[in-house]
Image (cartoon, rainbow, N blue to C red; front, side, top):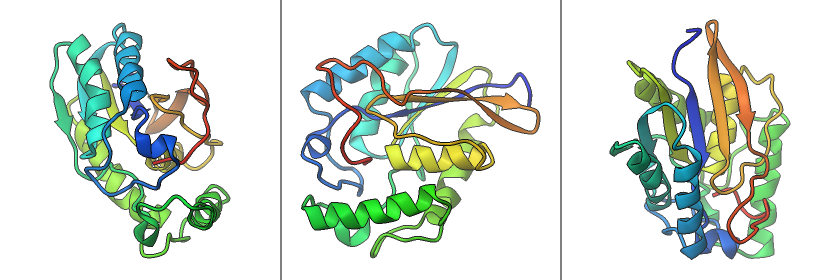
Length: 211
């Protein structure tokens, strides 16, 4: 596996649901807002120098819109991939009140402390997400000859990256259009880069919900 293609996972740009702290996890979901479109354009510029040979996105509208400028910069089409959408938050879908966010964050924090069986009410556990996400990653990497870009979602990216790294690396919040770059390392993966905060048009902070 050493010397093979890198996996470049990127969180989508901002949506109005993000800006209003609304839990929006069921595809197709909210589109990018004006700032999100600017972030996606900046991402295309940022990745223009990468040796990208494939660009993929989850089934969510915001992920596809984020991937489009990257694909355009390399003369590629965006491949839409099942299985790499955001963690489904079940009964909390569409909610934004303090109670819903506290319930979400309690499960979210449990995952980062090792409780992968913790489950959102009526939604998914970390194990559920990994079981659908990781086979999809294997599929898009199969036969790849250069960097593979995958536009996905904050919590899903964190959970997948931790699994690919053998649950040995500390994971961080992924901001809108933040990158997580993994490179092949022997039979597994090594972390090359993690954006815990990146400059954004409009000076967006890394706060908010991970969807």
